[in-house]
Image 1: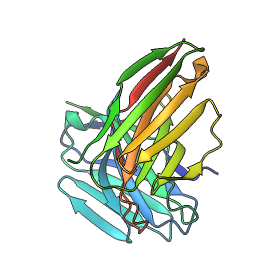
Image 2: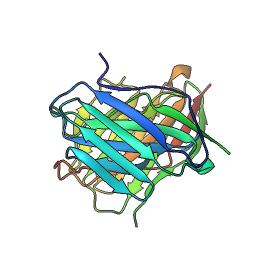
Image 3: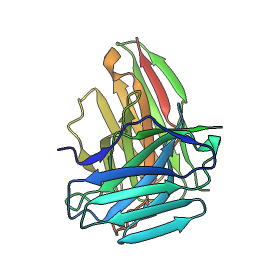
Length: 112
Length: 115
């Protein structure tokens, strides 16, 4: 079982709709959860972090965490073509606080 | 200054060459990282320095040699690389409080091609 799993996509969403990206993790003791956005040929950019169960909103982005289900998601409202990118879920395992483990990433395409 | 600066942005080297990748940050972060990313794959951790000491080496081959001269600088020395080492090399830094809000910030990366 991979430490962090994501559906690799591609996920295609019409402009203006809600894009929903999902991630599961295997280490039940994980404490920190992040979503990075990566455009082709560029480096990962941190867009959301979440540490407690529930929702965290920042502009058009909402991160959701359910530690009991070992599940974290990212919702993008009013999707724009500029949101087209690969979204990487990343988790800090309890055992190694210095190690950020990435999922495979979900490639998202927003269609005008 | 909220940037992590990496140089060079692109590097082409032969298998017998010796080269170095450089990374600098001025955010006062005390942890610095090297990640390797192959095309269409996630970043993979190579090394972590915490307070200028090597704290994690993910069983990286010795042809990659990290160095942390001070809290702002991180180098990756390359020697006798193989074509399969061609990848995007990412440097990152974080505050090193090791609380549950430890955020990593990435540089723009060095795209390395080994011929």
